[in-house]
Amino acid sequence: MKPRIIVPLVSAATVGALAVGGAAFMRSASQNDEMSASAAGQPSALSGRASGDNPAQWHLPIEAYMPTEKQKHLLAGARDSLIDACMKEAGHEEWTPAPDLPALGGKSLVDWRYGIHDAALAAARGYKPAAGEQEAYDRAAEDGAVDAAGGDEAALKGCVEKADGPAPAAQRAGLVQQISGDSFEGSMKDPAVVEAFAKWSACMAEKGYTYKKPMDANDDVRFADPYHVSSEEKETAKADISCRDQNHVQQTWFDAEVTLQESAIKKNQKALNEVKKANDAAVARASAVSHR
Image 1 (cartoon, helix red, strand yellow):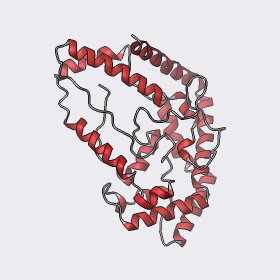
Image 2: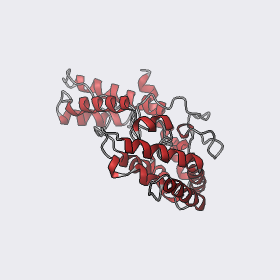
Image 3: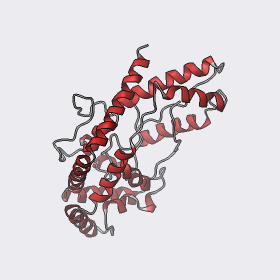
């Protein structure tokens, strides 16, 4: 059984919190298969700078040292099959794992990392994910939360430990998380980003809104209820995106992060190469399990 955190709802304030450290939003295993990839199967940065106007299709350099969504799907599937077989061998025929949580919000590491960017969605949902996504997520979370697992904890723990060798759980190495988190925090101190934020704030002020930084609007406590989207929230979100686009906030912010990550990767290249080797080895073991 894959470790899961059951979170039945997502508030506007959660967007910024999850962005720090590169966690962004939870994603289903089938997502991001259309991400650009290198020969090694790892996502690659788009020529080091933002390209196009859809952040969901941008890729940060540190992603080259993270398992892709396809690889995470392979690892999780192999792991589940081993644990399921182990539980049945232990006499727990009724065992069933909790369901995967479906997509909610951002569809990639960068999507929603810097806040909302879809004008049509903002007009309908403000700072919230699409209504259908929230409903599907809540249903899956509820199913997982009430899942009795069908077996005792000791047996499950033993089967999980048994699966750790041939199919370890997909993880981001501590160094990778650190670089991702540090670059996100550090990018907001970049002079170009500071200037973009100031221009965005002035633009919002002209529209009647008082916020210093883009995430201040995103995290406004008035918009925290995940099941209520007020007209005020919608209007604020539309103004937010208009000012973001006018002052190239997302692109400037992303470019600053790319620069910081490139520097950090260069300084930690040897250790990151080992991270990549470990990822590749884990995927190879999981692939062997899947093809038994």
